[in-house]
Length: 184
Ligand SMILES: [Zn+2]
Image 1 (cartoon, rainbow, N blue to C red):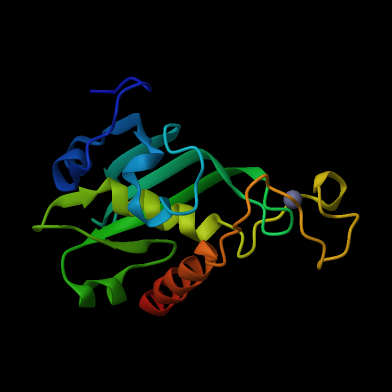
Image 2 (image 1 turned 180 degrees about the vertical axis):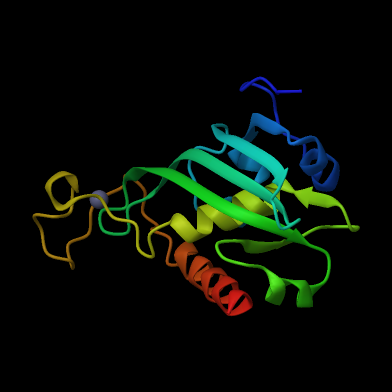
């Protein structure tokens, strides 16, 4: 079974069965399914392209080789205009069902916790990969940023009186910190 690229991937996949069968699954997930980034993206209807190859290595470890392509539109933190970011990411994961199993994983595997002993949560996987690859403070290149020629104090009119004082990337920073802490 090789899913077509236009197929929506399910939230949960039977990781152990797919690994036994050595399957590669390709498909997409709508950005609006990924809750962790919903506050910061301006293009929730676009799709993330994903390829997941499952297998078992010579030492008996199950693995998932994940590749992801996404195009996110976020707000430039300098000029407050839309900024499109391309994210390409690849990860090599090994599923675990108990936290201590992470210790036993050889390089280069990153642990990923299965739900209910066998289910891979694809939304959680994609969320983590995107958060890891987003810049801490997204900005246009100097040359194309509308605020680059002015000084930082200059306010760029967005056509609306209120500019959000809440920076969604503060949330992101928290998440990133947590993700890093969990991994170490
Ligand atoms: Zn800008």
